[in-house]
Length: 466
RNA sequence: GCUCCCUUCGUCUAGCGGUCUAGGACACCGCCCUCUCAAGGCGGGAACACGAGUUCGAGUCUCGUAGGGAGCGCCA
View 1: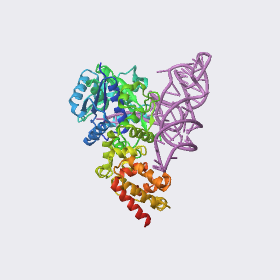
View 2: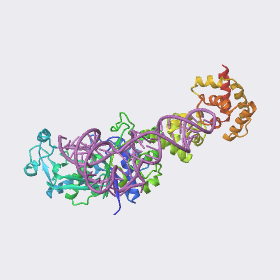
View 3: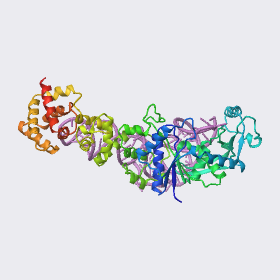
View 4: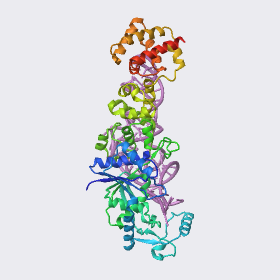
């Protein structure tokens, strides 16, 4: 039997980080076992579902590269099917119509809570389900009365539940919509899902869903419930204090592959390995190796990972992402050096593409801000003027403009003036960038371009004098 | 309140009864390298929540306790 997993978000917001990891695990499990990955949009909550959210989720999935093999299916397009299955169940005596008023239900709940019991429907309409004028009934599932439900969760292990704990849940609302616990089961059966991989918060729903599978005479899939992802302080991720949307991570300058790598290691590991290519993830991932406990999202480690990819990827693969960030920062990539060169010069110095774009600005636009302390310390230092003049002359005479040539020119200046690199690099750096921090001096000068470098040195000499 | 789940360095984790005086990574600290900032190299501090039991032997198995989380809707 071919493995089929699914990711089934409800479109009430963007794709968040927890959902992204769930999607990743579903996708990896399917790929690893040569199966299919299905995308299903659970949009039966028509109060909160929006089309913008559907698009946001699709965008997030695409950015991460989590391609689905089937779908997206939409639950709102399957309403007839749910109704049909529910009616069949009523006819077969596996479900029944319930006319109980909300008032009665609320009273029941309050009473149970007051007695220290778990709120549960008393099954009144199992036997007294007479139509009440003016009341559109709901359909309730007739849950087994005794016995236990046992399932072997692939991450949690064996979970056992007494049917005493379960009540007759509503599977079909009076407004004609199915409820979640019913729709998922019908969908997962119809879509032949073999492995249900989802968030921890659904463990409690699993036993009642299994009972529905049994009632429907369908094979029960394997379940795997993923632990939560908490924020740095161990609190629930909230958009108030954390970046939770996947696209926020793109905007913040992370590579999709780096995010994937970070996410896959949050709750799963393969020995001591930290860096995984997508292919390695597919080869090595096994849902059974996922940890049981919740983990915290650590932006610092994500940053480290992102830099690993920045440093080791082929710069040409990074260029499109970097270009995107340059433009986002209001920088015209055509107004300066080859972005691939800039990436190589900066990737040891930043953790994100956003920082990289900011630092790259000096080569694409005129210096906007001068660090006055740097000017004072290096431009107005003894001998600085002579260094700048000598360097300018050497640079101007350079027949070809490469980092190597620039480097040789600087060495020549050092020899000529009999001073160390420190005395030359810092004044030049300030002249070219306006600050005392930048990549190695030959790259800093090289990236400015020959004529631009000369112009900036002239400006710096004037500035130092004035 | 009730039910279910979780618990190894600050964080992510390795560990599947002896090889654990508990390993790796991020972060932190120190040294080296050095034209600035980084990156890199080397080194350091840092954890089995607690208590019983099973066993020749427990981080690893069982049960309690404590702490944390989830669920208990005509939401998903």
